[in-house]
Amino acid sequence: MKTGPTFPIETTALLVPSPGSPFTITPVQIQNLRPNELLIEIQYSGLCHTDFLLRTGHLPNVTYPCIPGHEGAGKILAIGPAVKDRSLQIGDNVLLSFTSCDDCHHCLKQSPTTKCKLMPPLNLGCVRHDGTAAYKLSDGTPVSGHFFGQSSFAKIAVVHELSVVKTQLTEEEMALYAPMGCGYQTGAGTIMEVLKPEKGDTVVVFGMGSVGFAALMAAALILGVETVIAVDLVQEKLNLAREFGAACTINGGDTTDVVAEIMKITGGKGVDFAVDTTGVGKVVQDMIACLGQGGTAASVGAPPPGVKIEVDAGMFFAMSKKWIGVVEGEVWPAEFIPRLIQAHREGKFPVERISKVYSVVDVEKAIADMETGKVCD
Ligand SMILES: [Zn+2]
Ligand SMILES: [Zn+2]
Image (cartoon, rainbow, N blue to C red; front, side, top):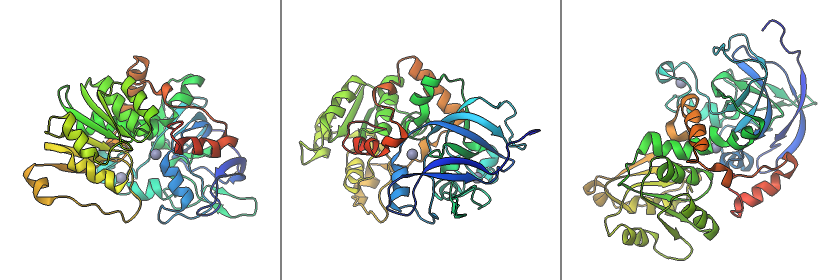
């Protein structure tokens, strides 16, 4: 950088002052930029359940105050001199996703990668790669940032280079595509990159939030799977699921036995693939129970700490079932997000039907609407 920015830089962030306290718009000061970081003016950010875990204090080893946000969309303001992607220019519109260490044997093959040995601390720990804080309050208190390498709830974010996904997006598309970097790639990636169902397979998706809808759209609309079953407690979401290609829906509130309903739909065989986005222990249990011979269940939603489930171990073995955890769809965002954007442009990933834009001052209303199922992200 020949003429870099002058620090400190004054900005604001929607931060969490302490575990359990609400998001608060607060002035913060950016102290510096590392050579492998960029300054991004955040225009939009998705709101994901993992941000709520930061708010409630359920993520380990986080120092407060801290800045959440990990589905950022914004414009490059400054580029550190060691940033490897030389095609990035000041003024480019970019989307933001997770980061990794760029140093372990998995990262050396391709980075960022969900196989990185430092994936949990670097993304969930709200910590910079070198352990320092990029932000501070006016009284000098350090503020943790770099949540998923980005902390996109800052107006100007200090972002690790591996979190940056270069795109050619218009202003309007930035709002629509902000959740690509977590929610959408998690749901769609689990289907397209990990489970890979074929047209004649059966798939069930539990929980119709943004991740569940992305999984449904990927299976039914992008891959053309004919029998996708959607399960939720909110009837309006199930009606929408039908429009996105779900062949059958089950309202968990209308039945005491979701597994029996799935068995009825599949003629007693069970499903080939199942995805749980809820993280609720009973739902995870049902997901494994409803698998057919050789079926695979993917846990995509985070259960609260300490949740245990019961599995019939004998049947699990005899039926050759598999249960896997999938983080961030196990995708490489730089390659996968452009594919999802293309699918959207072809009408196969209609995320404009499940998202809504709120002003930052209405964050509590956005959260309430997510929790009541009025909006998905
Ligand atoms: Zn690594
Ligand atoms: Zn997320």
